[in-house]
Image 1 (cartoon, rainbow, N blue to C red):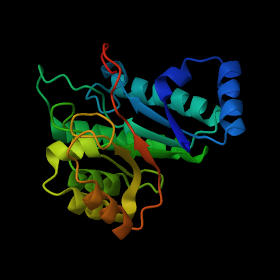
Image 2: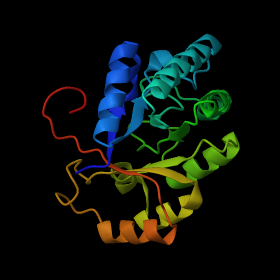
Image 3: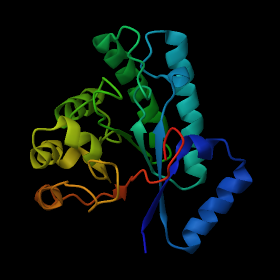
Length: 226
């Protein structure tokens, strides 16, 4: 009964073309829209102060975008602008990382445009990342990148930690909101926690949001991400 299936873009990029074509064919058969999500590793950190690492991250992201195009995927959200999860055991230079990140995102946006792919920097809580922690930072980041195919991505789990008001955060993003993840405060499916879904729904209607809403519950025990 779902309309959308969001898949791990890094995993997709590892598949041979034959498997990607097979996935695309199955999606078309069942009329499922495929979207992509990714959390770049430190090895591919496009916000790195080390220029060789940054350039390597950009090259890797381009290979991911190539794979997404083969699967007819036009949305890529997540930590496309830095790396995840952040290593806070080492010093963080936020202004420098932000500058490097914006440089990378502009280049990647131009590359993604040829495939009609939208890049969606996800707003993450302060324990997992440091560059974009709330909708205010997300909006300013997207404006500073200044590309039409780079838009804001919000996630209710992270919003629950960082935002003073869920509704205000959504309204602040306004027409820049390009993708929306939902999950409870405890990362279970909606309804198994205390998230204010009525407030969230009203805010999405207030901004006339017509993008996708994707559940991201972590329900499988074991592993780094269940």
